[in-house]
Length: 344
Figure 1 (spheres, rainbow, N blue to C red):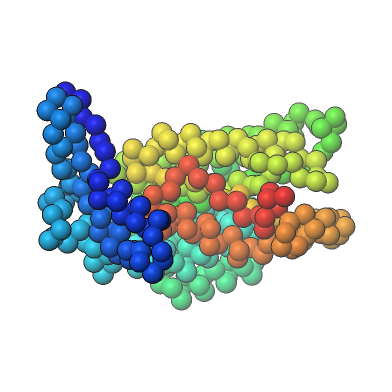
Figure 2 (figure 1 turned 90 degrees about the vertical axis):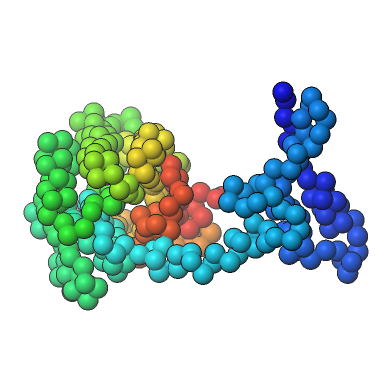
């Protein structure tokens, strides 16, 4: 028996009315919803009889007297999560790599502002001051906790040990990872030596896999799912004008593809994996570069439609969107935050 699914006759009629009659005589949007959300017809090719099948498993077949599914959906607005809940991180723990300074520290602050606890780690012996002291004040203000550990993300055993230690020490389940650690080296491709080239790939690609894997193992064991946000770069999609970053660009392209691969593989565990690809951001490291090469700022600002580079806090929103329940149906996605740089 072959079943052919056809649009409901009333649906076709309603759409024709909506497009072929004068505006003053057209059915209202609510009237259209009532018809379009009605069941479809199923035709049995053996009996040539049409059988009405409801489109929602939770409602009886629509007969014109019951509340149609569209209205039921509207009435659930009272029970849907509010925005503060969707973007909230209460009773969760997030690990932030590269959390000693710069963008990592900024995102760590955003986790605290959203009600969560944060564990920062970096290869530096101590986090940057006075930023860390400011972060601790923010933790107290929002009722969260902020911790710092020294970590070389390329060390598999130490990374797994530290992350498990965090999961044991933390007040709340490990639900998030923001991987911000990375390195960069500029060199003409013809002159690029293999030692620094391999070092960049090791930190930016292998290190990313190590921290993502360590986090996902814990999330899978806990059975609560979670969100992994990898900081990539617009340089993973383009070659930067005036910068010679073959190794760095290649490594960030690898992170973008790694994200998609992990998202597909870990989705069954409720683990989402996404990337944020910033453009040029005015961090402390950027300022140091501009002190010796101030001419680069003019080039960077003229290379995007907004004619400026980003401030660190402008990365917080996209990162927290992907980290929080607000993006619960988003995985394998890259949020490019580049001021339109790649839109030319």
